[in-house]
Image (cartoon, rainbow, N blue to C red):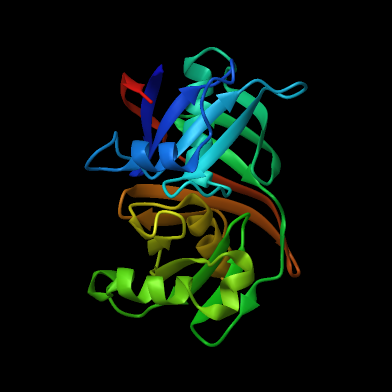
Length: 257
């Protein structure tokens, strides 16, 4: 079976997108893994299917590169850009994905994706937090340059910690709080490696920074580029959470699966 695809990236987080309005994509773990393989496939952090929805603008089905599913913030922005490209939406949309129904829109060159409200941030110790922004995130605040951290080794250790077994593991973010922005690096569950950017991770780190006195919106600098996290804070409740950043078409092609 030959299928057309588009490759998109959002601050270096890259995805293979398919127009699946005819429901022709075979949703098999092995196929997703093969497509995402950077040596023997197209290469990507995940696969996204855009489908019709009976009452909303579209449905987005997201797979990590290992075939598992989760909410993906950068993927949601890329999914919207692709839905625009194939003529399903224009400038704004309401869509369904892994964890439910979301709002999304384009303004001034960036795509703004709304996440669900977050109640309470779990402080683990003086430098570590746990936040669920649709996907689970363990956050470590660091005083030193993030490039000095052995992220893959340390991230894999925390990702597989028994305390997170009920969640099928966690994503792990190292964050450095600077004067006017926050730098992060992320070990991503489902990719099982560092990614250049993680949208839900950037959001989780942004909320922690907000809890520590940073004002919304907060600039988050990833290895792949800049994101912005905006929110309203009322006591322990975070509402109107928006992740914004670019989503760009890299190339298009066809693949036989």
